Amino acid sequence: MKTGLLHVAEDRGGDARLDAAVQLARAFDLHLTGAQAAPLSAYAMADPFGGVYPSVKLFTEHEKRQDATRAAVEARLRDEGVAFDWLRGAGSPATVLLDQSRLSDVIILSHLESDEGGWDAELDLVGDVAVHSRAPILSVPYDNGALDLEGTALVAWNASFEAAQALRFAVPLLSRAARVQIVTIGDDASEFPAAGAAAYLSHHGIQSELLSVPRGELSVGEELLNVIIDSRSSFAVLGAYGHSRIRERILGGVTREMLLRSPKPLLLAH
Image (cartoon, rainbow, N blue to C red; front, side):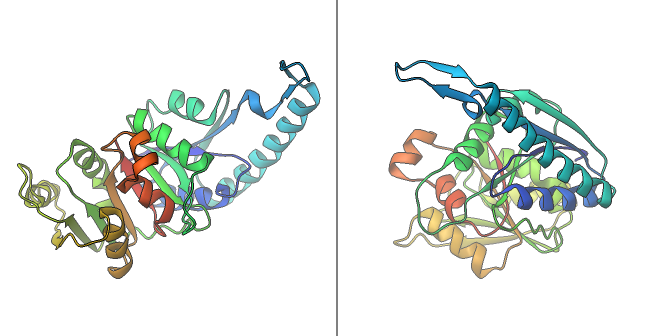
């Protein structure tokens, strides 16, 4: 893990993302690319007849805000001794991040951590990028970018391709953890049981423990959140959107539950 793509924007999760990015950069001698997006919606105006046109005033104001944010982020990265470069692309944040992620080892985003439920643009962004990117997503709670790589790491295992992808991407992080737990919720009588995941990690010199949690009345997402809290995990690794995002938005799902309520960083891959 040597290159990271950091989403930089004027939103409530910006400071947490930057904190996490700095910690990753220190741990892995990571080169960061700060990515800013300039979506049309930031400087478009509507007229009474239903037309939409760009506003020079709004565009100028948007650029000034982005310039100020860039200056603050660059100052922090210089103070921390982090190597970085910069890009600013036209289009939605998801489009810009995906376009620039081809040679990134990790993309740093943020999630909600709220008991109020609901959905917002930040979570839509994580979903868009996670589903279409070939790089893993490190999503941190919007108000807490602390990233303890030497604590307990939790790997959620359900034998899916998504879980396997996340596990492979997580090897650099898991190799630094003091303790790795592979957790299954309910029956693990699959063709690729958790023991296979543990064997895979052992080939990379990573020892892990198996934790089987009986499926009770709670959802899988709720059970997993309880394990994260009870085990005092520092971060969790899981496959993203084994079901479609539309299905999860309507009926619920593990990824949605975790992005809405996880108090810890999540390493996600689809």
